[in-house]
Image 1 (spheres, rainbow, N blue to C red):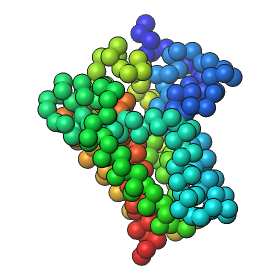
Image 2 (cartoon, rainbow, N blue to C red):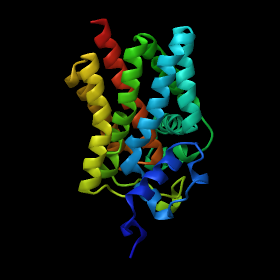
Image 3 (cartoon, rainbow, N blue to C red):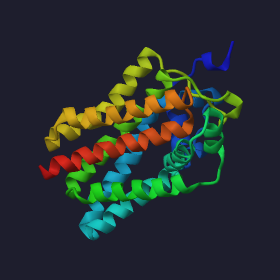
Image 4 (cartoon, one colour):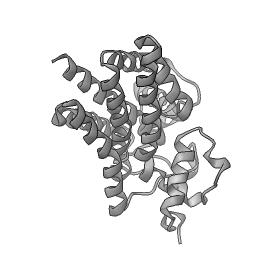
Length: 261
């Protein structure tokens, strides 16, 4: 029997996701079996409840004691510390690989290179600038609600890459030596609930148009999916991280635009 078919307990999978997607010392409390790390994407949005919640709390409570621009920077810093800039590293590698061009083998080689290039540096500067500007343009309450919704939602949307594309490398070539398994129907339903509950709460409390805040990020994900399909015929962990951040940024762009209308 292949390892990808090994049945794992949901509790182990949740714990593996918390260990895998954050830098908090959950591993000191409990170490799930290695097979659970293949299922971490099934609870990726749930980790967004933690990272998005910490960022939202910093935004709101920070705004009570700090100037709003400083509170926004503090919130971004808190999430970077919790995640270890895992997805930002993926975004930089993604931009270097696809920006550098070339054939499939060259793109994959560039993405695996630990050195950051011009596209990665410029991309992170632009991304961070837009992230700060969009959050700064909102009120503290709206920004906190939007962050708590956008983080799990973007992870839910990005997780669909695992179903839509094959892994672009051999498993032994993966950076973390783990290839995510395709979620089952039950896991897919769980992913949907994890990602949409905070979003539904945000839409209800803020009155933001649900069709724009859902449709625009989905379109961003779809165009990135087409790019990966055409260029590398699959996905990598870096691709998942990049799509997650860009989909999340699309939510913020829609939300701040709605605030100006």
